[in-house]
Image 1: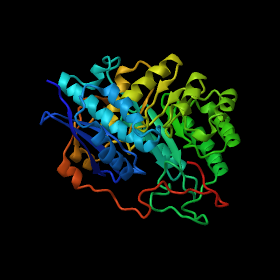
Image 2: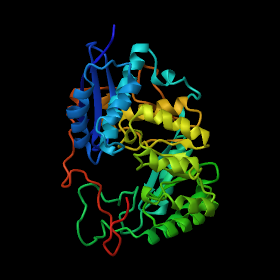
Image 3: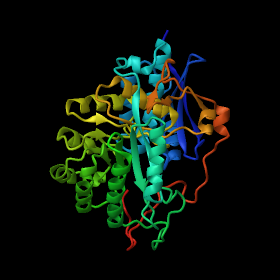
Image 4: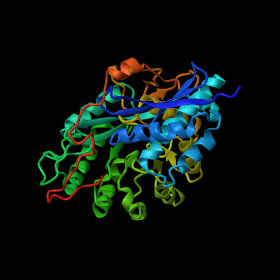
Length: 409
């Protein structure tokens, strides 16, 4: 008997004060449904509209087995494609259909995709602080818990530094002259970043793997300087050193530094990342899976990267839902070219809303053995954590240089 899509709807919740979009695909079998992640936290309401007003009527009554055809027909249905709103909406449906397929087969999704080639996936965690000693204390705490990969971020005093408590929060954006809370100067950051890693490698030793996220905030020439400065400290990788608009600079970066490069958090369109992969200008692909359309797109990308020696390092911070983390982990387990997985521990409220979450222990994520993606949601609990209110509806804040010009991203 053919099982068909009955309804597609969104569940909006924010148990960690981060706006998540979960897509639920209901089927003609009353107890059979699938969950997917469509989280685009800066524009979640646009994604909900795309799912419920466009993809739901377009896909009703479709056979749930036809994942590949649903992916392509949905992608083409808007005519213009490769944008973040459509890709996230499509991702939610795509992941949910894989979840359904696993449940019908009685198998975890990673088994459907070829089975495990590793038992668990090593993760990197975040250590940050307002000064270098605070960052190193945070790193030691993670190391004592068995973590072997730690990302280090330190505040530039008086500036909105990415990855630290001083970073400007959504809703604090200013549209005018810079203030101390909104200002960021790349040269100041480059100087303190070198001191951070010099001291970290001295105090933390050689065994721990150190990572750093530039978050695309530094112009090309300064980026080359920072890469050369950090080479002696043997970073595991250097994350998002340049914005997508400047991918040609990766050729210069490759020529002038041997530091491993991770890139891709802001990519939506294959034309952005294909040149970097085929020319071997990056070492890790860091894409947010829902931004390219879900598991189907992620699986293709992982296999493409394998042919060019590029490892996966899927984006996995707090604005990846537990369903998204489970999808990341499914690919981590079944793709030979897995590199590392970013992860932020789930808070108590997230555990209240979601069950079957991947478990973090010994510096790695361990999967559920439940069929499908293994994650369930309590919709009543989800409703207790509505979206937080922000003056600019959670828009990415405008960080500016001292002269008032906007810093990417």
